[in-house]
Image 1: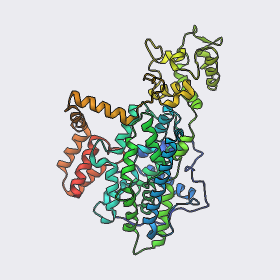
Image 2 (image 1 turned 120 degrees about the horizontal axis):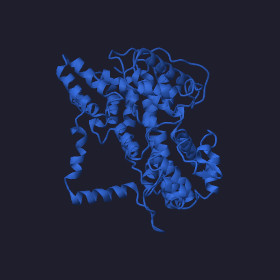
Image 3 (image 1 turned 60 degrees about the vertical axis):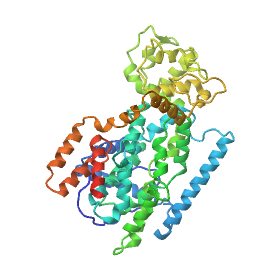
Length: 497
């Protein structure tokens, strides 16, 4: 099991120490250590070593963020007003943003489509474990003090619906834009995902911290509103983000439930001040790692093109004919040096193979990647092709043109994702009214060995406890988005009703 199924024991004091940076990782000097721990925790079944490493990671993060501001009020009694004030500030700032855009201001976040896709890929380690910090509470679903928290987790899972499960939606978004695999992401991009998995896998150890993390994470931030708006504008499906905007509302959504969860779990018999302090510590963890706006600000399209070609260098080295020469040197020679990519790109420009700040189709290099008889077709992923496309076009790429779509006529604005989607749905519905409903049901109808095994196990379970354990296991972060996990979520809801 991802977490042991036993009753709560309030944990001891978290590790304390001198104040640290709010953006530091546990053991930051160990290259790829965070990514490796992420992979182990995301695999589901944890051995004692992985569990201990996860606990150590959380404690180190608590130590590093101890000196940060939690942003929470002085006492739990002020949480409701704090939540509503926060939502109102975000709403007011978003209205200011919209007014500025109407007045002609450029996008605040994304320079072009490549920038938006870079962002989606960079935050994937966090989005692919969405809600994981609450998983450990499922084993205690009979405890009414955790009702709001468990309801939040089940809603993160889409209540067992494929079209609402947050992780499944994000996986589909990555697949649609060729953003897998996630090779080459900085180790720091996995910090927040590790924290969420580590908390969810050790709920008995970090109950107050989980409650605080949930409180901070489920508030509606301004960046979520702007991200959804600009993705839609660039023709990228914003539904994953708009879904969070609706479920995190301060009236009846996750933000309100997060506040209620604090009041439901605040200890009446122990040290409530210490419990609240630990809730505040958990809230700080919701901002640990590289934040959304930091990821966005870190995009440099020149550097990203160089990184892409560097990743291809090893497979491309030696694969080119010596007849192919640039600036008097063979391509194989250019690719032989790990630090030679910037000079190679400059040579391609000087030789006329790449014409920057012009339509991509005017560059000979682009014609090697796309089009009839493109000799390098398939070498680069759709994301990588988009980055190269927008890099070549330069400032003109602000129009959001996809690498495989025709240029818009002068003076005409490209349609948003929602506008394109409405047109496609209208056309599909007009040609075959029953088609969309049939497609919606395919995910559940497809044969799946895990689903078959789960159903067999449930049928053979000897008691309600074993039955519940099977459902809880299938609702873990590594499985809940699969057909078996979706089925288990629906059954779990039926039992809880």
